[in-house]
Image (cartoon, rainbow, N blue to C red; front, top):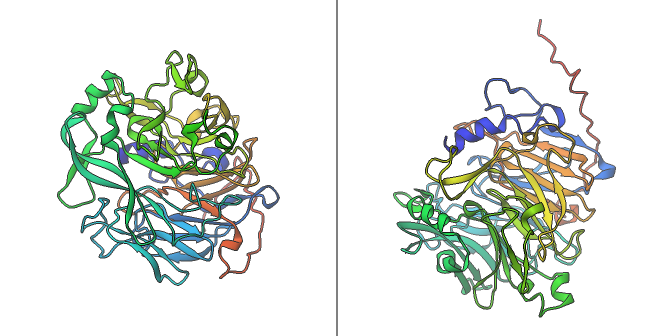
Length: 483
């Protein structure tokens, strides 16, 4: 089953949370008719603002909506099926820009690749990194995660930038096939590379069991890239890269918590079920979770061995958006991750993965917040926490994200099914939006990641009226016959 077919199957069960909302591309017993736009909004319980997201539809680009789902601005040439766009204070937007319609590659410095740009409210380019081939993430100096936090306003687009891209390389330690390797570059205000990191160079530091390496050698997720005629092993698939930023652990003891240096970089590696912290000064991997999360697997931190650290954390599969919650937000210093489930990893073959590729499989998602020193779970959101019988009622098998908001709520992107939800610490859904932007080729409304920004990030607009949206009782909701 390929990824698109898997999405068509899984998407149908993911949106039953509010009003039997499911993907119209799903089949058989799953509903096909449901509302789009804002379907729930309780203003008194929300951290209201604008929400920005890329549509994954080339002709639609990036959209900015208010809490009632009204489109207040659209940039159709930014992030044309690339991701993610980010809103900066002052009404600026960052994302990819294709130099020509066919140039949509994700390889650093390649003539077929996209540029990474910042544009003003009217779409004028005010900063450009040519042929950056950005994929999945980038950060601006002064903002560790790229989303709003007190003291970390996202507005400094003229300073240093951290960019996640790819390079084509060979590494026989991993496989004899070409690698579509993950590459991170930090560039200064003039576009000069001042720091760089290549994932395959640190393969030996990533603590993979031999059973994982054996399968990876044969099946390193080898596939076509977005560059014409180029194939490579997307062996690790880094889907998030951010600075740790100022944090309470470093403030408390910079010696004992050396790995939490604010300059260090945390990455999420989807295909290996791992997340790592990179020491900026040396480039070494100094903190890692996964790939195996068995309760008897030992985990080491700060010279101490935790024999059962994974027991409550549980297996993480195909995760996205692993990051440290920025200082000033509730939960600051903890790690927040969208644990997709779905399928990922390498290992011995099993009935669900005959080649051992993507051997870890699970048919539900969750958002997990945990202490990076002990892996103790602080907060978890899933169908189970919402009181649902079926775990698959909260499910996005890939893409997706979680943003901690200043009021303690969490904005969750269930990306495979185009659903955004703002949930309280007690798991109440206080805002929900379903994207109406469908890719006609696959009949899906995928959204990689959505961000909420304060109203004052966009001075060009007058703060909109906030009108509550209360959905009908779903068991009595009917569509009247015509005639």
